[in-house]
Every structure is written in C-alpha cells, then in structure tokens.
Image 1: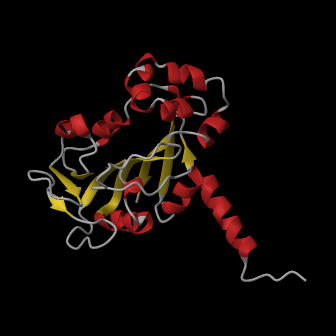
Image 2 (image 1 turned 30 degrees about the vertical axis):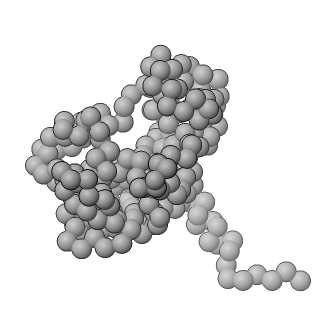
Image 3 (image 1 turned 90 degrees about the vertical axis):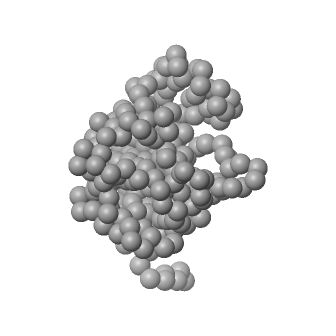
Length: 224
C-alpha cells in the first residue's frame, strides 16, 4: 500500500502554476544588445540606486540617479560604499532603494534565498531589481577563493527564488548551440565570436523553447 505524506500533489500543482506565470522574454536570444543599456535607460534621476559588486562595470559612472551606492562583502579601499553580507545582516538598508542592480551576484552567495529576501526588504514599494544569473556556465571563482562560486539557476529555480515578488520577467542569454561553445572557448567566445553575432545566427536553428531551457543564463527584471 502506498503511503502519502502531506499533500505533495497539491504543492506540485502550485509550483507548476508559479513557473507558468513567470514571463519569458527572448529579446536577448535574438538581439546582440547589452542588458546594462536597458538598465541605464530605465533609471530615473530621482532614484536611489544600489549597484551590488559594481556590476555595471564601465557603465557604472553613466548611471544618472539622485543617489548611487555600491555594496560588497569585502573592503577594496575606495570601493565599496557599503560593506555587507546580503545573506545576513542588512540593518539600516531596509526600504531604501528604488532600483537594485544585481548582475552575476547570486551565484556567488552561499544562501541565495536569504539574499533575495534581503534584497526585497531593501527595495522601496514598487522597486525593481535588475540582474543576471548563470545557468549552463563554467565555474568562475578565483584560485584564492576571495569570492566563491556556489549556484546555477534554471528558469524553474528562478520562478521559485523570486516567488514573493509581484512580477518576474526572465531573459535567456545564449541558446542551445551557442551556450556550449561559450563554455568550451570560455572568454574568447564572448570577446571575439559574439561580436559577429554568430551566436544569434546559430541559435536560430533551434526552437525558442529549447533555447530557453538550455541557455547560458538569464537576465531578469523583478518588481516588488
């Protein structure tokens, strides 16, 4: 006789609905654009913005907002403005930011669930998180482990990770063909080959559904 503990079928149905309501946007699978440019365009001059890990890189100084702060777990001298473990204590940062930029951060935290809960607490009402996480991507922590590489995220994982937010939109990056090439040739594929947009061409030979399920990672826009 089968033994049923709890109500797993009902819980699984809820998970399926959660995944189905998550928006998938294939714009970056079909266009060779930089997600950071969209972030710049959507930041208002009156916004209070947090750029975690200064992930905007060369575009960080182009952010035009009332207040722009950076955060990291380590002190690098002039950088960052705030030293904080986003998985733990964020005292004083609650309800502070209109926009949070979290590009290639969540794979490096030891507890992404706590980190995302804290990011939500840091956002003002109607605030937005812009970010990126890897899925099928190579290990990329330094040898000295000054920061670590813990997690990878499928679209299903992100639907659950961001389940407490009002709106979740995912943008797959690279598809089924270009993703393994990016892993195989590491930085050279992105630095050289993708400048020709060959990745866009190659991934056209595969369906949108397969490209979404076997991608390099996801840009995301999450609204509180």
